[in-house]
Length: 158
Length: 418
Ligand code: FES
Ligand SMILES: [Fe+2]
Image (cartoon, rainbow over all chains, first blue to last red; front, side, top):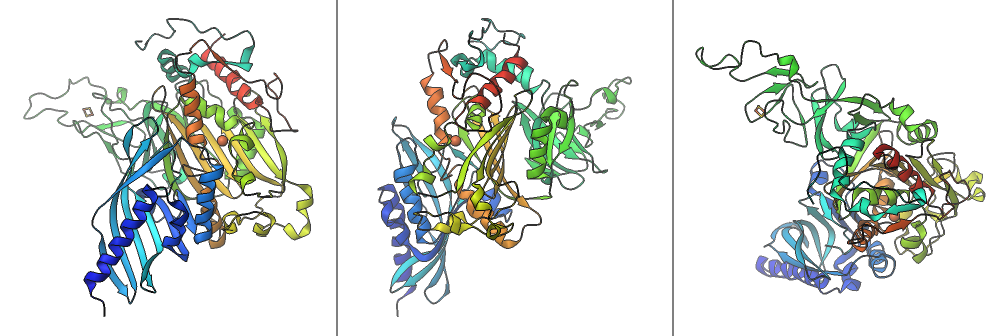
């Protein structure tokens, strides 16, 4: 049987790899961090705490995530920029066998093509993680933004 | 350049001879003009959006907002009546309400504890009679002369409007018949909030006012529908201008052959949207109205717009935060009578607009590109001749800039720019 420490390391590595993949612009693999029916949502803290459903971005299933990626590559127009995620230590709790909840704070610094790097997003990830065939996947990843206010636009996932 | 407080510009603005088909770039960058707009527009004869009525449903509820740059409060009193006043204490001018939203019997300024009722009347002054007979206010101090500065208020279709001017007609008259009717179509049923966020866009507020009226750019800048070969079955629609040109509606209709019996009311028609989407349930939707209109945007002068994109209903409110900075609020709503399935579809369609809108996120940066492009060229001017030089409604096509010319027609008039 695997110990808690192994699971923690596995999940932390997974959460870290997700952030680094986005920072590297490796978005084609982004949907594969989720279960096939996985849910991804970006929502403001204000809306989330009010118990309201409509945030800023919502994907249900890998197909919708793939559409997002294709849209931002081929349809959407915006100024070039990149992200740098800084993650806090995750708080992880087991819900059942191979079923975990995790909460992780993040900062995302955005660098624009004029060279300016600025804090773009601050918040927490609230994750429901399934371990399938020894591999963690997000069944649900809710990105709760501290601020209700987005600078310019939000096109890459967080 | 110092901001002039005088009611005039140090260098008068002369509108180009070609009228509203030309838009002087100076309008986006001159701080004197920006200051003058605060007086002539936001303190002038217009109805300013303050909040949704559902933001303040109960007695004692209040919500703060801004009219131009002026901080304001909208509040509901014990009798259920809605009032609005400047959020500026009658004593030294501190903000009275600090929280964005709240519920209170009295609005109390934290600085020296003066308190006001929900109509803005001064009700209490700390140490009014002094301490142990010493100090306090003069005997002839007249509290009734020190209310919070009031705005006239009207609630129309669930929207709370305020005006500083006695000259503003009723909201219905201000909108005119076609605008009021369309707003009634969209908003006259009880609403429920679905979610809210805002965006900082780095441009003058008027660039966004133009952008929401720019039906010409829709299929050119925003290519989501074409990229995914989404067969919208929508024919081109048209635009309707208010009589005084200040407001507009731009709409697209479903093609007539799509109004066959099988597509009756309340039927979900995701399948109608052939596409290359891997997640086509993004576009699950249903026909809410019998008029065939599937997409609409209605702009209300000066800084309000209402979108109905498929079933995604949102109030957009864009607030000037400086000459080249605007906060754009997205208040997404549904109807109280919506069932879970309808709510689910409205929530999913929230993906189409807003800060991450698949269809329209470009609007977050495109106005900034104009702001930056026109920098240092105050004597240059933009062009708006698409669809002719007239300022008239266009039933035939949305490839027109008529609504932009309409905005500038209203703007010139209220700003008194000859
Ligand atoms: S400033 Fe409000 S009580 Fe003094
Ligand atoms: Fe647009």
